[in-house]
Image 1 (tube, helix red, strand yellow):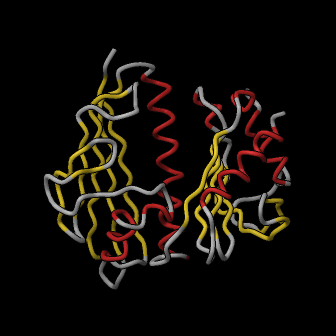
Image 2 (cartoon, rainbow, N blue to C red; image 1 turned 90 degrees about the horizontal axis):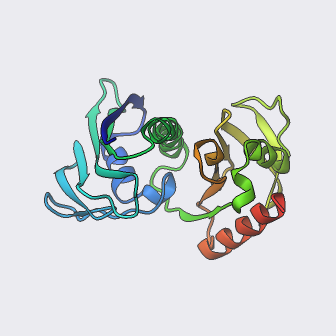
Length: 242
């Protein structure tokens, strides 16, 4: 049965409205995935959508009547409202709404939980990497990574102790980088976030939502290569779940 949904988040950041605007329009590869907006009302938006509000650096809204590549959803809209905060920084209101046409509870639960992780990663980008251009690379795990305990397996393969706490510094093994020191900036049963001086590594326990474990890398280092990143993590995931 088709049913409407709405996911709302509000938060404050020290970044200026212009910096937030740049992050959500031209800098999405640094914290989400690369997307392009045609900079005008009526312009093209991601997933075959249309820009219905373009008011820099105040409001951006993209609307899709029939979301390309998203079979469980029809109407989809993402709205960002950005206001200057007294004393500096910005207040941001994010609203994701639409219509889910099947598997409503599971799809909504996944989207709601993903939103927390994405908005956290946006704040990390604005705090530590704002204005820097990232190379984005990622990989999806094999079918075996859809098992109920698959995300815990990935955490162990990284070298994360069960009691490694969010906010702490950890030693992890990363393909293409070896053993590195990183900040464990996010951790719950569904997602893991690692941050170094040069990159953010995002791990998605989508096995909990009927899919497979995924990895996204936002690499700010000179000479970073998206194809190499994708190949390294594809091999890593294949090895973990062999």
